[in-house]
Every structure is written in C-alpha cells, then in structure tokens.
Image 1 (cartoon, rainbow, N blue to C red):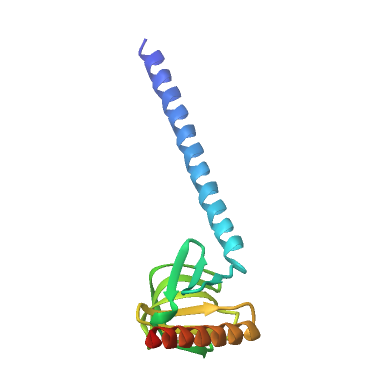
Image 2: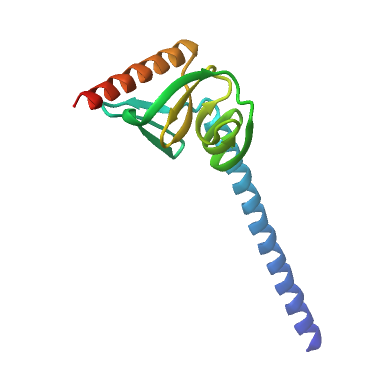
Length: 161
C-alpha cells in the first residue's frame, strides 16, 4: 500500500513539474513576442502633428502634448540629443524617444523624437520645452517657421484686443 502512495506522489510531482515548465515557456514566449513587437513598432514611429487654430498638438505612441500658440516664447532648431540624462516618464525604442526626459540645458523636456531625423524642432513655451522630429530637414525648417509665425500672429492679435 505504501508503494501505491509513493507512486501517486511521484506522478503528482511530475504533473506539477510539467505544468510549471509550460507556464514558464508561455511567459518566455510572451515576453519575447512583446519585445519584438515594441522593436518593430518603435522603428520609424513619427509623431502626429496637428497645427490647429489656437494650438499645436503633437502625439506619438500614447503620449500627447498640446502647446497653445499664445504660450510659445520661441522656436529653434537643434541637431542631436546631446545632454539627454534620463527618462522621467517615457518610452525609448531604438532611436525613438517619446515622453518626458531629463535633458540639459532644458531640465525636463517632452520628446517626440526619432534621433535619426534631424534637425529637431525645439519649442520653448510657458508649459515647458518640447522637441519634435519632422519627416526631414525641410519639414523641420517649415514646421519651425510656421510655428514661429503663428505664435507671433496670435500674440499680436491678443495684444491688439
């Protein structure tokens, strides 16, 4: 009778061991799949830029920033991400940086950046600094010029009224 109990215990341990291995295998495949998805989706992800009447809206990969033209102090172009210190609340996949990052000389900045697309548009506003990648250098220059012009015209209109 004790032999039957030992066989039953051994059989139960074998079943539990196989179940543990199946769960571990499933978790490993899930983690690898998610990492592959993030890598594939992260490549070439560019921000969606909407130039609205009163604000510039930028979004990418679940992050969104609305910058009222009236609050924009200046707009500049910048090459490279020198001074990037760390992520506060954001995603980084390959050369794509989206979210809040610590960056010198700005302190905290909101990034919607593909590091391979330069120059970057830097918007200085009362709400903080935002860096945006455009499709190419001509697109970045045009976005910066349009943003400057619209912010200046909004400021003139609010000063006149």
